[in-house]
Image (cartoon, rainbow, N blue to C red; front, side, top):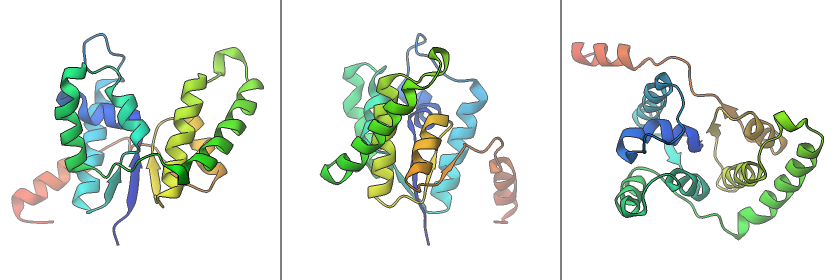
Length: 176
């Protein structure tokens, strides 16, 4: 049975960096994260898992991309991923998660506090995951981990190494 898997914004940015043609000024993670994120997406596709992009992830992804490029990217994303709307079914859970997140935020040292916008986006991603019965969220965001745990959604970090190299060698030999 295929899994229903959500990837968060940074995973999408890493996987789609070249396709998105992000400007040089855009803040990006270390280069090895790019190949690991791409390898993760290839693995999920190979497993025939349903890759879900919450609409808020798509919005965050598009922020640093010139508007003129949005239509083409939206077409590519919608052809390759399931993009559910953030709808009424998600709103109550997201509001509860935001409220809890803001309370936790008040108790944190300033240097450790996530931005309010980050709390909101993470709550919307987790609510989308829960409402759309995602089996798993791939993220490297500690705050999102805690929120997801609060409502029973499983999270994983992007694997720190890829098995794609070995899969590629085996496929050239005719092995799977």
